Image: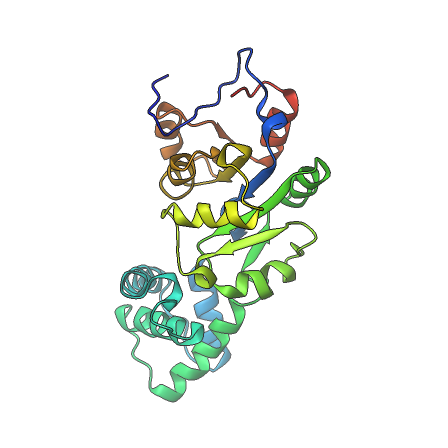
Length: 268
């Protein structure tokens, strides 16, 4: 396997020290790794519209409009408007309004305000999310092993303060969180992983394993600062083949991660 001077690869065989015995901390991505969205975006936009007597917007047009609006806002004002000091609700109001406009729905101000309040409230609750069945057991297992557990996510403040607790992923399941909307830095910037090292007690990167679901946002930046990393492919994505060919360990779920770490087959 080809290595560069920055990356440290772990392998599934060999006589080196097992990774678990070297670890002091595990950091975990949130969306796609611990939790998932339920249903489609259009479901929630439709419910908000119908609640005030409007017809259901076209799902495909709303979805495409949202992707354009979100990407545009995230480029102009990253980290949910952190540096520009844009309030979270204002950042999202702009995204939602532009989503509707791009989808061909230009509501008057009073109507839009009613629809938006429902959408914003819904996505600030547990309603649109589900927790993967293996998430809580894995986090508890890691802490029982004496590991520090951190969350690293491109997410706004409501994840830490409202959404995760509402889903039952309370601070009792993890020790610290690094959320882009609170910190003002986001993946794939390696600085968000350096912040995680600081929150874990300024531990060495080689004592940390990061688990995520994106080669670009999780694996590469974590490895670039010397952390160990592996990827989950919960949804059998086509990209997983490329991840493996690039040298990443790719597993289907957190049960498999726990089993691999406990087996002592993962050597570094």
